[in-house]
Every structure is written in structure tokens, then in C-alpha cells.
Length: 298
Image 1 (cartoon, rainbow, N blue to C red):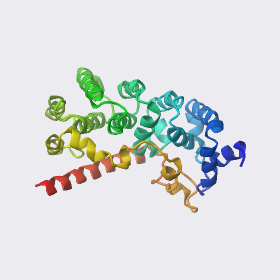
Image 2 (cartoon, helix red, strand yellow; image 1 turned 180 degrees about the vertical axis):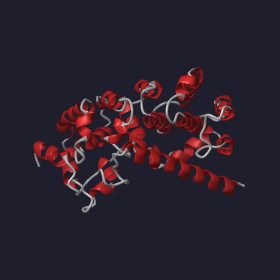
Image 3 (cartoon, one colour; image 1 turned 120 degrees about the horizontal axis):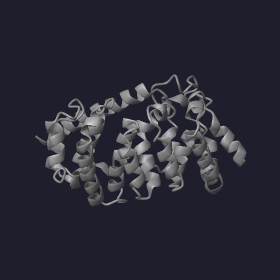
Image 4 (cartoon, rainbow, N blue to C red; image 1 turned 135 degrees about the vertical axis):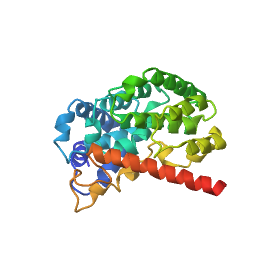
């Protein structure tokens, strides 16, 4: 299979997973990388057109393949892609944001967290993208790529920045999601060092209690940061992208009777509402898991 054939196979969804084409793409890593970068660059500049092509998937294959390749040139393109204000980046990538963006960012960052900081601190960026960016920092610590101390210091700065700009942040839709994500990730990373900041978020009712409550924080505090991070080292949600094929092959849109990615709420979904709903469901599952762990300890 020649390069042109590989790209052609990956361009549109037919309802069948293009296993062979992806295998060949990985084999031709050096040759195909420039084309994947170009595809990502063109996609980020034409999101409206991309939204009107429901079966176009090359930009998604590019995200996962470039993450597997640990391609540094993909990093700024991915950050720009997901820096678009509003829901459009979710609309054209669906569940990728809430399921895999954190791992994709960590995979191409090579420990440079400045672009991730830009996503987090840009008030126009979608809140679910910000949440993924926050989690990517925890992944980098779990994987030993960035020191815990560096991220602890940044979280302190971020808490201070957010508190200073609280009025403008709270004016944004679903701002509680950002506070909740920051509190959860901060509790995993450094419950003692960030104790005063996290307690303040509770005191000022900035956290959505359905997804994270004080007793959840108390669990993280009791465990300590080392135990919290150790628990995540075997968690696939906190790993880097190593195999694009295994990451994508079970997406529901590849079921033979479901060729349209717009019609399926699982796997790849282009609806921002569905992505947000899935993010909330995920948080609820995490909360239930913490409750079960707490019951076992007692």
C-alpha cells in the first residue's frame, strides 16, 4: 500500500476500521508524518468545513498517530486546534476531548508544559479542553516526565490567578467545572501543599459537590500524594499514547451498521452536549469509585 493509498483509506469513515492502513502508516512513520501534520494544520484552520464533513476522520487519525510517534511538531498544532473558543473543537472531535486529549497532550509535550498552561489560562478555551489540559499535567508527573514539585508550584500560581479573577471566571458558563477539575487534580497531586487553596474552593462553593465533595478530598489527604500518584501508574487513563490502533479500533462508529459518526453517542461523538454529558458521567463514576475505596478502608 503506497502513501497516497494509506491517506485515502484514512480520510473518511466507511464503517469499517482501517486496520491495515494504520499498520502501514505506522511502518511509514517518517514518510507520513509531514502529511499528518499538514492535515492537522489544515483542519484547525477550517473547523466549520470540517464540521460539515461528518465522515471525515483523517484529523483524528493524525492526533493519535502523532501522539504515538511523540512528534514534537504536532504539539503547537494540537494546542492551536483546541484553543478555538466555544464548542467547535468538541464538535469535530467528540469524545476525544474528554477521553484522550489529556494523554495526547502529554505524549507530544516532551515535558514542556508552557503550551498546556496557555490552554488552561486562556479564558476563551472550552472548559472541557481546560480540564483535559489540567489532567495532562498529572499524567506527566505520573509518567516521571515532569517533577511533582514543578506542577505543585504551578497549581499554587493557578489557584492564586483564578481566585484573583474569580468574578470574570464565574461569569462564564459552567465555570464550576474548572474549579472542580482543579480541585480534583490538585488533591491527587499535593493535598497537603494545596490544602488551603482547595479548602477555600469548598468554603466559597466553587466546586460542584455532585462530582467532588470534602470527604473525597479527605481521602486524598489521608492517602498522601505519593500513594495517590502510585495508584494512577497502572491506570490506562494516565498513560501516554503508545498504540493508535488499540486506542481507536473499538470505537462504535466502526460498527458496520453505524457508518455515521454523528449518529453514535459512544466511541466518537461530534456533539458537544454528548461530550459534556460523558465528562460528567465519568466524574460520577470516579466519585463512586472513591466512595467504595473509602468504605473498604473503614
